[in-house]
Image (cartoon, rainbow, N blue to C red; front, side):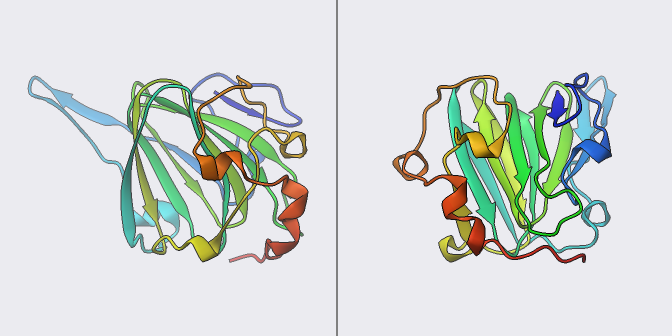
Length: 191
């Protein structure tokens, strides 16, 4: 499912690029099956515009867990759900971006594999609907000095989350409103 303002929710598996913040990409992944099982290509560097991925993380979460909302400064992230179902809510908070203020909710699922890439300056949260395993690639090693965050239920985000309750880390539960971090987000510049 992808829903974005001002467009209504689309069917699962379809993504209108105009509804996503500039630089956010969603790609269908195809399994090559035979009687032994399947092989699915999860990543090719040309799919991401050539940015080298320098760190890979496996994130296992239980059902009803929210991670974020985080804003990475200076690096891209790449997501693939290996097991389960995750909604990625995002908002373009880059001043001057062609899609500044655009919001989207993208559903990623192991049942219909897709990959999502998010550039720096996109506020994003991950809502795990069921026990899931998420693969995350980054173009820089994680450093808390290069990450901002805001509370996932802040109305200023305008992300259409399908629930109002979830399990949070103590860190994410204490995140401030979006307005308190916006000045620290660098202005958009086209790559």
